[in-house]
Length: 122
Image (cartoon, rainbow, N blue to C red; front, side, top):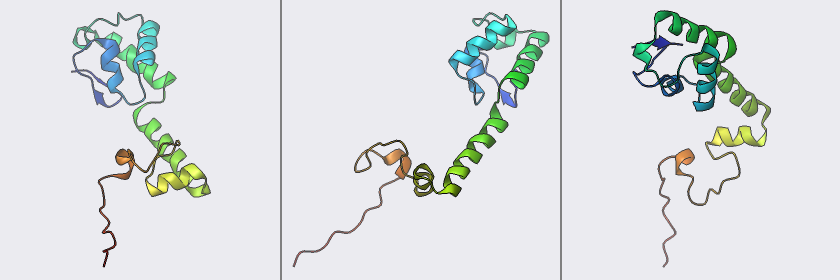
């Protein structure tokens, strides 16, 4: 099992396996395969150590992945929260940020339902 950028890559096609790295999607995985001249349909376990080192070098120099990217994203969110802008307030409250409705269908951001007792009629 190959280890690149601190991630154990599964034995799948190179372009699919690279997407297991945080910050590498399908299109950037295809570009990395083109840069390194590795056939994207080869399996990860079939690659030589030189080819794996080439993949590591490209990811290290040209892309911000894993820890560096996670840190940057966290700092961006913290900055939004610190300046008190609308998006920062929504992050702080744990609500959707991009204009979605919240009366229904916001369960992913809001979490499990919290039942509120209604008024009793007398």
